[in-house]
Each structure stands twice: as structure tokens, then as C-alpha cells.
Image (tube, rainbow, N blue to C red):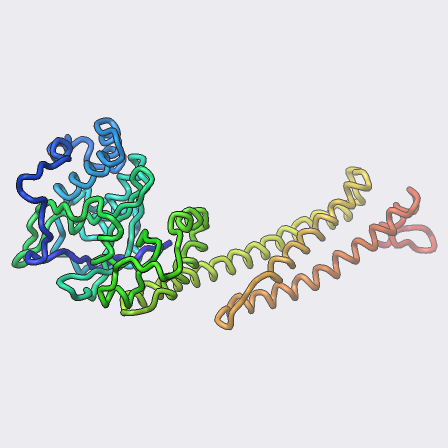
Length: 396
């Protein structure tokens, strides 16, 4: 799947959620202190970071905390490029960029956090959606993460957790609110495009998010998101996008961000369909060309009067293979599901069908000849290669 590059959102200074109350000890104090002192030799790659995490931390919560604190403490929000949009940026570059430059926007924070989690043995995903601040829904999309910690899904926003913007400058400060947040709390200001990633048994609609109605409502239909996630992850990428598109539409196209996300999903699906059509057509053409090549081998062998000698069954198999390849090519082109926009493929199929019709006639002619040939005696077979005069001499 081609992932959207998002305009990042970051908390404004006046919107920072309260940090842990003074006097309450930080249960992650030792992990936090350690996570800010990792050697530079391990911080240049996802593999290096994950290796260090696995060597120094034990539980999944400890590992997730270490990853979150390292990223939020070492990657600065890239204000200069906060509006740089690239819908089809290489996913690997999204991860490599913050490691290389120590800067990033929401998609970089999220992609890096999820990648290191995965390499550390934690099931994590990047989630795309939009947010709400000061009671108002943002007009630009955002990206954050979900991670399965010890069998339960939690939510993480390493971008909002890294600090805030004040007077046009980024202030780096750990925000505890966005580490291992419960889905019930997170939904108050983070709304996924695909409600699968709300991690709620009674998902919130886009309209309800706008209205601030995010409390659990058991009068709705029950949605077993853990089972749905397991099914989703067993699908192909195309099937995943198709299922996601249905859920996005079902939850309501409340704003332009949702509409754009759905449009990109559908564009990806259409591009995939076109590519599969072209691949299938090309495969049918390849079968036709291969059949033609083998047919010419047979004709050349016949012109040599079937020398060197082969068993009859082997000679028959030469033509049977040609006929089989023609059948395969026919089946492939017949199975293509085309739309009115597939004009080039339609033209190609018309030409291919004409070629196959002519080819089938030639193959049948040779099959009939071969059937007669096999019915003859040794001398009769030999005479089939010649047309002779009354004097018994070959003329061709």
C-alpha cells in the first residue's frame, strides 16, 4: 500500500496536557534516564536501536517506554518542513530521515516508533487520522501509533509526546499523556480514518467525534476489534485496502481529510486493478508467444522428417503442449474484468484473440495431419513427406 504523507499536527503551548502531578514518583524514572544515554553507535538504524532495547530492557512495557523516550528526546519536530507533502514517499525513507537528520514530522515519529517496536518484538502499527484541540477539529491530518503490549492494545503519539510549539519554535518536553494511553481516553482527541484502529468494541463515528460524544455506547452494534484485526492482518495488501475503504465509508465522510484518505485508498485499489489486468494480459501474450515458439519447433522437426527419431507419444506431446498453452492464454484473457477506461488493453485483447484464432486453425491442421501420419505404416509415413510424379521421384 502507498501511505499518505500527512501534514503534521503538534500541540500548541497553551494546549499541553498536564504532566504527572508533583510528588508522584515516575515509575519509569530509571528507564527514562537510561534511554537518553544510548551510545551513538546504535542510534543510526532501526536494527541498532532494537538490538540495544532487547539487550537492556525486559518487558514489553519497558521496551515501549524506552523507545518512546528515546524518540521524543532525540528527534526534534521539523517546523521548517511541517507542510511538505509527498503522498508517495518511500516508507523506508520516512524511517531513515529522522535517524539521519534527527528531525521529523508526525509521520516520521510514528513510522520510526512502530518500526523499532516491531524489531523489538512488539506488535505495532501506524495509524492515520485527524485530531481535535481546544474543542475544535483540526483541518490537517495526523499520524500516531498503536501497540499490542502484553495482549492489550494501547495508543502512543510520539509527536505530541515530544513537546510543543511556542512562538514558532519547538520546545522539546516529554508529555506523559501520549504514552500508553487507553483507547477510551485517546478517542477524545484522536480519530482514525479507519475505525478498526480505535480499538473500541463500540466504535465512535466521525459525526460523534465532532460532537464530542466519545463515551462508550453499548446500544450500538458490538464490534470485536481484536478478531477483526487478526482477520485484517491475514489479508493481502489489496484486500486490506478494500476492507479499510468500506469501513471508512461506513463511518461517514465528515470532512475533506477523510474524503482524501478514501480517495487515495480507492486510487491505490484502481491502480492495483489496472496493474493486475496488464500483468494478466502480458502473461497471456507470453503464453501465446511461447506456444508459437514451440509450434515452430514442431514444424522444423516435421520438415526434418521427424529426425532424429522420437516416440510417437513424444511427437504428439509437442503439439499437445502448444494447444495447452493456447488454452491457458484464452482462459487468462477471458477472465479479465475490464472497465470502459481499459481501452489499450481492450485493443490488445482484440488483436490477441485474432492471432489465437488463426493459430488454433494452424495447430488443428497439424493435429489432423499427425493423426493421419500415426495411422500409416512405416512406408506410408515416409511417403507423407513427399508429393511424387508417376516416375516415383519427389517434387517437393
